[in-house]
Length: 441
Image 1 (tube, rainbow, N blue to C red):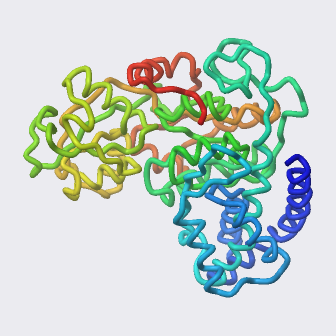
Image 2 (image 1 turned 180 degrees about the vertical axis):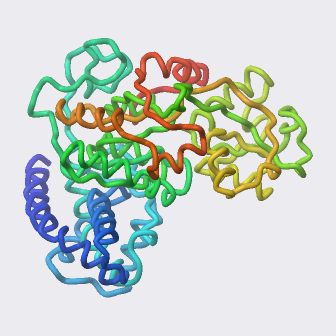
């Protein structure tokens, strides 16, 4: 097994050399086939290619073997390439070299690559680099140190509940490009634009290229960071504890309004024709959640419904999962769901963009205020790089930027320094009430 692993590492090293040489021309390749040749569009397509090369997607060893001859320059027949494309995009596959870890993130490749030529080019990059980069997150030895609830690969000597920066310099990384992902609460295309000005600022502060990667699920985002393929991220409220304990996430800031107030509330929505006038009326009906890792989309409403209304999923109502907050909100507005639990910060932004009208939904319940998305870095970036990233968040000037344009809709206008230990205490209590385990599986 060790011999096979060493051989695979050697193969991956050679493949990295090949792909690195082609990444620069990849943007022009994409631009040629999409008809866009302006410097701006070329740069964005180069960012997209690097993100694809970082491969936050499902893959199998069969896919890796399939890609080997393709990398060498031989393109597969179109039907074969299309089948390969389908297996990557539509399936939730498992990589046998990372035993017990399921990569369930899915990518809408159509947003980035169009036409048969794009499918063929994608076949050159996807599974190969995914396998190679996945290796970097493997075989992390357990350390003998204080760690609390953290996974055995991390230490917490200072007791602040987050992973310490490694003291062993061989464990530190200094990647270029840096991969950034924002929590998958709404349409990823909206946020690729919203974060563009900030990412340009982040590039200037770090001296590195920065790639925005539109993750499709909370699980995929956590797995990407745990595997070493995601470096900077905004994890949603409910995912923060799992990202901290299983992926070595070190959050240090949240968005806040200009007066320093922050947070959002969980609301349970219905529509005017549902026949539901109070939370109790959901009994015997369907309630849409977003995902099991979401605070407002699952964990908080589950705890509140049980403690305050004596209502339990599968017993008193039928739970369904929409995947995202915007899906749940649109589902209620369009009368596909009779009720849904959501983060009202997402609802406010959708109303501001005229995606839904206020009169399409009715609020049945509003919770206490929770902390919003936590932003931070993976634990093993070099300390000076972590400091540069922190500075980029705190010295960013919001006025007139794409970030302000989008997030002012939920009254946010600055990055506020915070600690996971203090700000996420209420969320950890909700998790404890729900019997949530932070064990990594």
